[in-house]
Structures are given as structure tokens and as C-alpha cells.
Amino acid sequence: MSPMPSPTGSTGPNPHPPIAWSDPQREALLQRWLAETAPAQGLLPHTLRLASADASFRRYFRIDTHSGASRIVMDAPPDKENSEPFVRIAALLQAAGLVVPEVLAWQRETGFLLLSDLGTQTMMERMDRENPQANAARYRQAVDALITWQLASQPGVLPPYDEAVLRRELALFPDWYLAQHRGIVLDDAQRATLDQAFDAIVAENLAAPSVYVHRDFMPRNLMLLPQDATRLGVLDFQDALYGPITYDIASLMRDAFLTWEEDFVLDVTVRYWQEAKKAGLLGANSASGWGDDFGAFYRAVEWMGLQRHLKVAGIFARLTLRDGKPRYLADTPRFIAYIRSAASRYRELKPLLRLVDQIEGTEPVTGFAYGRV
Image (cartoon, rainbow, N blue to C red):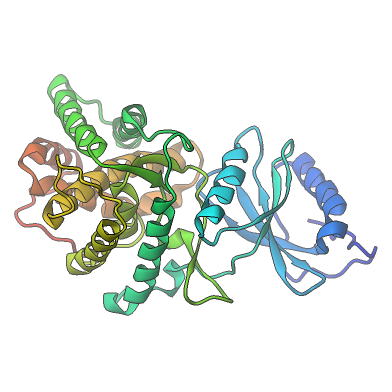
């Protein structure tokens, strides 16, 4: 990207690598928007540099200001990404008391947003993978943020995470992971096995109380705040829905990019369960007895995690085959291990386990292991 004039009319060298653009017209649109936005926001356009890209079509740039602070520019092409949910849910999270990027400027028609900058370090980047307990304080902060978010929940504000959505997500596994990635055509018996497993998973998930669901609540999307060590910032929330309370804790402790031994998973999940019970989030829910029985709650979390990882397997295959992002499939062994481990625990899911073992060419699970992959 060529240097752009600063608000004062001067230019400066940008020591960062040039930004690659596949669409010169979009680059020109961004330059024009920055030139219009810079004076009011105190931006230094020539300092623009790539900050990150995610699994969607969004990209994020960092830009400096005259005051010495930095801001984030989101590039969300409107023909591929709808920014309205991001703006709306950011306000919802902020009202709930969480730290999220503040939307400072938004040009709806071009999909450019200017956001406050929560820093450069994610919880994931500071993780001690060899010593789980060294991360306990961070996970306690994550649990606190999750409880805060869920306490703000109200029906009718976010779209429902209902049966239709759960089934649409589960369909990604046979449609993209099996058919497109593995080239497997299921026979009638295999399809029936998968359908029966999906019916059981959906029924289990729908039995959970409903709250606001972030849907990607994991260390890669939680930020260490430079000015506040007591809380975590929250990112990537634009797909939030209203649905099963088990989803976000399953996402946090059964990470698509990080695996912990089960004793640590249990420690954090117990803490979450205790805090959720104290906050009244689990309710009477007499059908499950979760308020009195952690084992019943943990089962529900495992079944929710199973739904998530069947979905993730399909999403990661789609990212590779449709979107040209092959790095995600490198974590395939991790979420296949989650699927097999969860399915091995429950009699109703043994047919699913046998099917996955057949597909993956793996030995049957003889004992549960939550080991690192």
C-alpha cells in the first residue's frame, strides 16, 4: 500500500510490510475513507499495517494516532460480511459490563469500521501449555467474563440458537468433512447411524437453559488488556445467539486449537458451574438437576462440545476447500479426538464412535483419554 497523506498533509515512512490487496478498488475505497475519517479521529494513515485476519473474509489493520495510541480498522467487504451484528452485539456486550472494541466510526456501505484497540496479546499467546495450573488465573477471568455476559441475557434480543441452527451446523460434518474433504459417500446404514446420533445430540443440547451465547469463546478471542490486568477483553462476538448455556464453557475448555488434560478441564468447569449456580443461571431446571448434580451438568457440556466439534470439522474442511485457508485442517486430529472421546463415554453414542473409527481408520477407544494431541 502506498503511503497516504496524514491529516496534516505530511507523509511518513511505514516500517511495516506493505498490505496485499487482491482488489485495487477496495484499497482505493479504504484510502478515501481513511482520508475522510483521519482528521476527526486523529489518525496517521501512513502508519496503517496488517494486524490480523480471521476465518471469515474480514481483515484487521492497526493504525496510530497523533496522541500515541493506536486504533483498529476492520475491513469487512459488505458483499461477504454483514457488519451490523458486530456493531449491535458490541454495544450489547459493553452494556453488560464486558471489555470489547468500541466502534468509533462505521461506514456501512463500504464495510469499514474504526475500533478501539484492546492490545496485541491474546490469552492464547501467553498460555503455558506445559503447566496447566499456571493458567488458572486467566481461566478464572474468562469464567468471570462469561458469567457477566450470561447474566445480561434476555430472550428476543439475539436470534435463537434453536433446533434449525443446531442441525444446520451438524450437517457441515457429513457435507464438508466427510463428502468434500474425505471423499466418503455414506451408505444407508451409516447415514441412519449419523442421523440417530444427531437427533440425540440436538435433544440433549435443547434441554439446556438459554442465555446469550458468544459461540467462539476461547483463548484466541480473549485479550490481555495493557491497562487492566484484572479483566479480559472479548473479540469475535458477531455470531452471538440466544441458546444453550453449555455452549461457551464447552468452547472455552474444548478448544479447537488447544487441548488440556481432563483434570484441568474439570477444575475450570466446576468453577464455572459453581458460579453459574450462585448467579441463578442454571435455574430450577428440574429435568436435569444441574443445580445439584455437577455430573449431569458435565455430561451436558460434553454433548454440547460434541456438537461443536462435529460442526468445526466441517467448517475447517470448508475453509480449506472453499476459502483457500488450509492451515485450519492441521488441527483435525484434535477435534476428531474430542469427538471420539465424548462418544466413547455414552452408550447412546457408541454407534457414532464406531462410525468415526471406521471413517478415520482408528482403533476403538478402550479407555477415556483427554491427552494432548
